[in-house]
Image 1 (cartoon, rainbow, N blue to C red):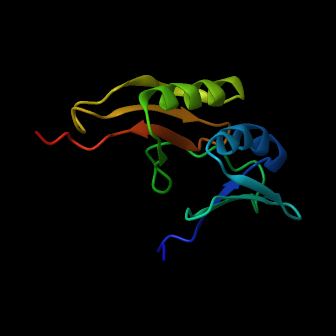
Image 2: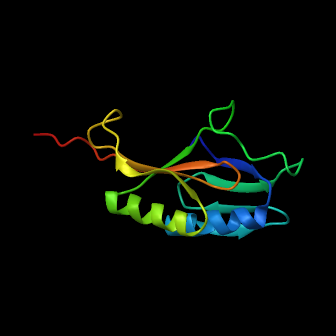
Length: 134
């Protein structure tokens, strides 16, 4: 049983956030479920991701580096998949924080990109295959 059940993210404009999140999460295999004023995405064996409206509209965007949200990393199967998801995200309104590249400070195999939506929500697409054993 997974310990993380769901991740709730507060946004200023749920319909706008859907236009940014849905193509990315659909590309990852998540199914969308609309509710009254909120939306969620599910994928078997993964935590649910929920977007809900801010109680105080206009209080965003979140500022990266402040207390609170840092980023959510999606582990994918290849560098090509990192590139594909980065492309999908930027084509649907996400802003590039860091283009896909290697991050040897993490591991010599780490390849990732970072994007941010209108609400200051940052996500990462990353590929970090296991070290090959000789």
